[in-house]
Amino acid sequence: IYGPMLAAEVLAGDGGSGFLATKRPAGDILADFKTGGIHLEPTSDVATVAACGTLKNIYALGLGVLDGIQAGTNAKAAMTVRMAAELAAVLGKLQLDRSLAYSQCGLGDLLATGWGSTSYNHHIGIEIGGGETDGLSGEGLNSLMEIPSVIDIANFPILSSLHHIIVNKAPAEQFRDLINK
Image 1 (spheres, rainbow, N blue to C red):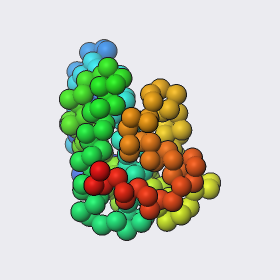
Image 2: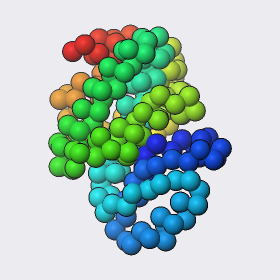
Image 3: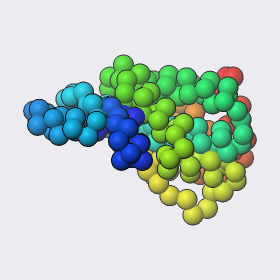
C-alpha cells in the first residue's frame, strides 16, 4: 500500500489515498480501509508500486536536503518535478510501468513524504542538509545504499548525487546544482 498517507494525518482522521498492490482479490481489504477514510485503488502491479514506494523515500531525502540547505520553495518545486521525471526513467530502466510515477503511489506519495513536516525521510534529509551524516538511519537511506546493486545510478543524476553526498560525505550544498541542469 503506497500513496500520500502520512501516519499522523491518517491517525488524525484526515484520510489518504493510494494503491493497494496485490495478486489476490482486493474487495474485503478495500472495504476495511474505506472505513478509515482511506481510498485505495487496486492494482496487480506489485513490482511497480513497491518500486515507487522505495524510490520516493530516497527522493524525499533529497527534498529534505534542500530544506536543510535552505534552498527555498522554488528550488524545491523545481527539484520535485525533476524527481518525478527521474522516477519515471528509473521505472522504465527496471522495465516497470512508467506511468505510475505520476500517480498516487509515485508523485502523490513523493509530495506527501518530501514536503510533509511529519515525514521521517524528509526529516533525515534536513539533518543531512545541515551537515549531519553520522548515526542516521531509515528506509530512504537503506534503499539509497542498495540501489546501486540494482541499477547503474550514474545515469540518474539525482540518485547519483544523493548517493555521493551520503556515502562520500560530499557537501550537501552541491545538491542545489542539480536544480537547473
